[in-house]
View 1: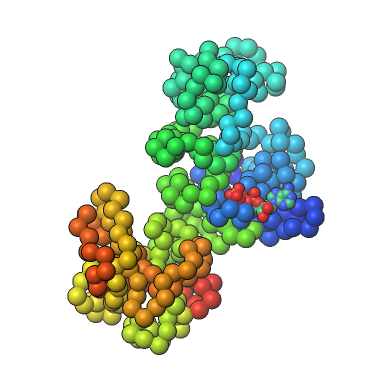
View 2: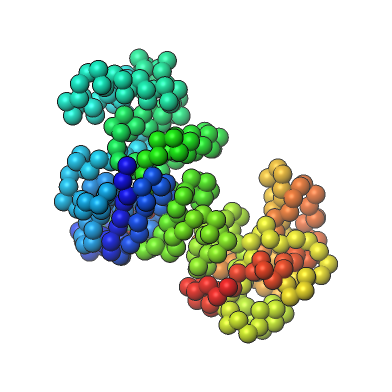
Length: 358
Ligand code: ATP
């Protein structure tokens, strides 16, 4: 096992595009770190630099106390699991898992022990003679995991390993990966653009945007105290409602704080006649209802505001709010409702959204 430390890591691609603009963080031995952020934010670039598949323009990548910038991928003691599995189609499951070990000249007995152990762990023991095309997507993904496990690396690197699976299998595999990592206690870095996957897997969550780290912390910390409006709207689904404060009752509720933007999560709003003391009330006209099973999302527009024009993370929806209510009993489309939240559930940000006030 090993810690992974990044010190002022930068990447400029040939042609001059700066994809990573100075990143610092440390992952302790045995931790599961998830890099999350929108498409193009630099997650894969960063992971590939740790793997050694991409050169580091400046700064240091340190694995287990050793700077590895100049070390070949094969000598970094890491194992990577990719989105497309990268299995050899003509080889059996057994040989796919054994391949890397044979290449290293490991003794046959040792290879056999490791492959059978991994197959047992991953419930692939009865499939060792099959070829990848005779497996389901989830089973192929497990073979790819098996290939990483048999190497007994210091660090696992995952690049969106579940994105080719259907929704149900994704959830099942997510649970499997977490269980496996808890058992093996191998330091892991996992890239995803799926915030739910990020929240459920991570010990330490790194939210990236435009080549920099927006926030780093435990999932709970980031959910409950997002530092910027970008993080506030990226983490949590449906996303946090963000309201530009104008000269109205809402600004009165948070007067004296210097806030320019008020945030409130859909799950922190309830339907009621009046706001709790010190809290806020939003008067909404119901536009759409989404029943997702145990709960219902009510989309409403605020009187006197235009409807939302953009749902891009970090941008402010103007006027449209989401209220998450338990059960299936929803108000009618076109109804006028009042959604309220207490003061302690409000998130306050500076007008540019870059600073959390409280
Ligand atoms: P996604 O979720 O879409 O995979 P990502 O966050 O993993 O995105 P990267 O693949 O790391 O993003 O890419 C970061 C930025 O660097 C993007 O703007 C991309 O266009 C750019 N980029 C990636 N590879 C190269 C390259 N070889 N040459 C030039 N620019 C590149």
